[in-house]
Length: 156
Figure (cartoon, rainbow, N blue to C red):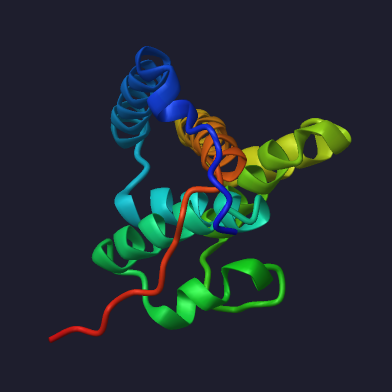
């Protein structure tokens, strides 16, 4: 993984800055629509793990811990369907995030829309959806560029 790749964030900085601005706008809208930091980071982590984006997983694990998620909860995100640690609202958000990440498979089916919509408010649905769109874009940029994720140095 030491191969150097073109980093889209550096090669077209204007586009990357626009994506950062988009992400900030999405974060503000999600917060205004009732998505707290805990739920936001659950969505960011789940999309990133589904995409196998180590770079974004590192960033959002740190943010998830800061938002109050425990290591136990973070390790169970990939098995959320079988885990009892998530609320119905969190489970709905995880399912919606997954559907957006794999949208090429089935889109957003009527069944999923109704199931998730029966738990999330319309504004929460919108917030989770835009968060998913945003992080999926970042995942693609960092995966394509093979952004490095070196081992962390031990704390002093």
